[in-house]
Image (cartoon, rainbow, N blue to C red; front, side):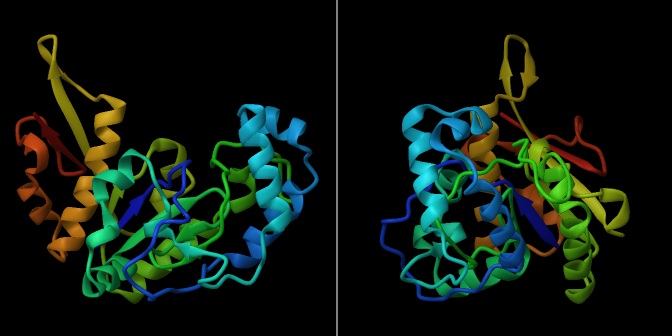
Length: 254
């Protein structure tokens, strides 16, 4: 069972980590190619491209010109420990032990606009590049064109190597749509989190993001390998709702 997750816009590169375990990104050559495209953009250009304010544009301009193809513990940090934001606050990887981190590295894939697909212990350098960014590149007009079928092929291969037949989709649509689910030869299960409000159950974005992180941690902590065991998830009041769920959509309500 492999789980996919979206990255976060924000990073916490300076915070100490509890492990020296690390791996190198699979698509470092592709990431380097994208950085070469991004270097062409001035801070003012980046404001429009990334839809950010001048301060963030300047920050990312500096990130691009100082980014190095060689990643190590002096210039990078493990992806799972570097990303911040609601999903990763829910996951709270800081106190995972090395056995749990090793399990995560085998069974969790973080999708990324810059790096394509990351294992949790893959080193990343500071960046901000959302998958939906319309960055012109040698393969097309956006990142979906750039990545093409590379990520689908990678995930398909990982499922085959690990003899897994299930993909757990905890990624947002912006990121999960980079994968052609019809080509990975696996059952895709999407957990959905809903809160009861105004007489009905609704998905609320900020709660959904945190819940995705909570479920990711639940999978890692308990070394979950069977999709049916996801139904035991009961963090922060969520419970599996059999009435609303289907074989491909596990719905958790509170």
